[in-house]
Length: 352
Ligand SMILES: CC(C)(COP(=O)(O)OP(=O)(O)OC[C@H]1O[C@@H](n2cnc3c(N)ncnc32)[C@H](O)[C@@H]1OP(=O)(O)O)[C@@H](O)C(=O)NCCC(=O)NCCS
Image 1 (cartoon, rainbow, N blue to C red):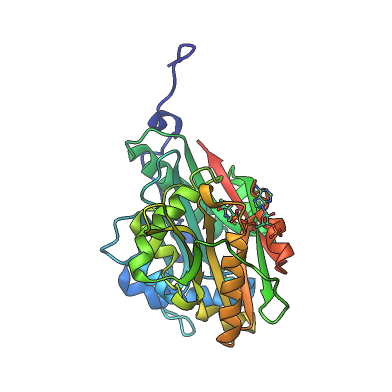
Image 2: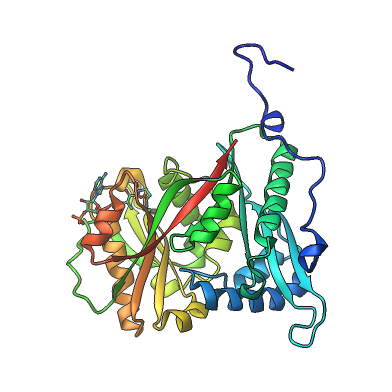
């Protein structure tokens, strides 16, 4: 039906969700079913085979896979695994996986993210594009069922060197939306002095500080492109492998004599990735300084403190990623601190 000028279509109308979505055809050689907590080892085995071939900038850790499949999670998620029939070499092995999930807590735009992989030996047969069709169909259905009626986005990250996957996404109607640059520096490179003003001190992150840090993060990133408030569950998932000594919090004395969180640098130990990297690394997932405290060297002091502790702990490298068009100029700031570009991943999206 034609819409009169000025009227607005609801998300459920705009999203054009299919009534039914089909798993990839059995003719492609795999049998499909949703994945559950018991499949964690099979997923990690598939991820290891794909990682060896693709050498992605990051791969999910055992803890992240277990969390994603945890039946107690509240995050909306669906998945499909493709299993080969038992042969001599790969008895009923998992050869492809597609996941669709919605982070909880989005307030301005509802996002559905897609992740997945096809085992190297099973590529080139149309499985990836069939799986992507299922994922996009399910994403549309999840969005149609959401009652927030906001702008919406179906999104997935792709490493810049994965040209086949980028083509697959473009063919399916995705467009490159934003580029995130991966950066790292050896911790042994010289560090500048990083003084902070009186009334500010840098401490290690603790569980007791965690909720205040999460709120400071949601405030610092409130107008950061693509960012949405992190629920406790999303925050815990991102910081699942946080290393307290490598994560720093800037505390500021307030006029009533108490202290509040001014900024933070949350750093993880993704030890599962060190073998592929060939060195050890502390990976800073999130850096932020609340607006009222910006421009006083707090971010610089936080990162310098992170790097110094990594060096003390015998770790080789400090890593992080940054939105290349970050309006705070963060990417030049990291360069001035000695971080260098190691690669990039692009966020491909369908905007609805
Ligand atoms: C980026 C951010 C963490 C900087 O915090 P900050 O405490 O104000 O930063 P500092 O005072 O330590 O300054 C760090 C550097 O950034 C530069 N900088 C700070 N604000 C800037 C701005 N608005 N534009 C350009 N450069 C800026 C400073 O000159 C400084 O450079 P230098 O140390 O090489 O001289 C803060 O703006 C923020 O939280 N932004 C929103 C979240 C975000 O973008 N996080 C990074 C995501 S990758």
